[in-house]
Amino acid sequence: MSPLENSFLKVPLQTIVQLYSNEIAPRIPKNNKLVSISAAVILSLVYLIIDKAKPPRKLRHLPYISLFCILKSTYYKESVRDRCHRVHIPIIESENSNGLFLEVTQNGWVLNVANPEDAKRVLLKHELFPKINISEERSGTLQSKFTIRPSMAMSSGVQWKRQRNVANPAFHCSMPVRLFGNLTLEMFRSMENKGEVFNVSDLMERWTLDVIGRAGFGLRDPLFFLFPRLDTSARWLFPDRQYIHEQTEIFLKMLDEVVENKKLDMKNGVLNSALEENERDLLTLMLESGEEGSGMMSDYELKSNLCGIFLAGHDTTASALSYAIHYLAENQDIQEKARQEAISILGDESCDVLPTIEDTKRMAYINQIIKEILRINGPVARTITRVAREDSVLSDMLVPKGTLVIVNMLDIHHCSKIWSDPDI
Image (cartoon, rainbow, N blue to C red):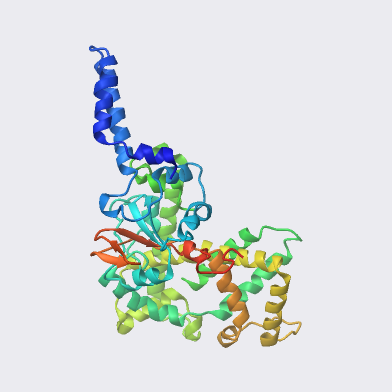
């Protein structure tokens, strides 16, 4: 925080009142009520901004990032990754930092957890740090239509456990490596027809959508994310946003049809039962899991989880694959070592050979490459916001009841206190 910001934040309400009474009010013509009211309103807004620029008193024992720093970052549309390196990393790498700091978000002041020990405690103690419910205040926004739904990602407690009991067996069983392999061959054929130069990221996005569509059955604009009312009652001011809402409704209706058709196929016995269990799609396995007594999901919950699968498996996978190609191209020695491992397992014949599940388990070096790429360029920067249900302690610091908490994976994965050469 700059000295100017620091001194500005210390202005008390009494000083503002005195300023208005002694300096502004005497200079306002007595018959000009509009000017007088306007001046009072402006000073009130100034005070509100100053008051909100600092965390609540119960949290001021924790280090925090200036509100003005966040507003500047938002105004210039700074990426999460750039703000991490510009603001967060210097804080958590400082000598006295324990990896905890406050930052203001659209939900208010949130405690960022950027050390592994506290992150593990927050993520495993569901009863102490449940996810917050933001569905009501975000109702009707584009984000709510697609992501803020009663899915496993957004739910907590009993609702989360019930859905997890249905989905967990499906996620453990569904590993359609043959399907992935065949789709990879299709992608290679597409690449051969594109010439020597083409957009890899675009190709990966198209390919991952194809994979999700067969195997599993942006969106966030800073302006609408920070001010959700613009996405609901004031949406008429933004024709482009209206169009996106309309397209989202079409997509959601398609998902309704997918769920209904899959149920009809199961009822009529027309599903391909000859497929190995690991080659069957997630939706079929989730529906079968429900019938076998693991608990049932409503159609709305099923659709909510399908939305999550599309969101979590599309851009994230496409991004990871694009970065993998980029880093392997930059590091020819690593690329060659990965190639030799694949040859040792699959052979070096001129025909296409698709790996089995067991083959993929033997690819230790390739799996290390994938994990390192996901660390450097993780698909998700932080967790869904949680709330401390009671007074808790993280790194010997009091976290009062009601404090909003997130685990900041991006900061953890790029902190030199945890990793040597974290950005390489």
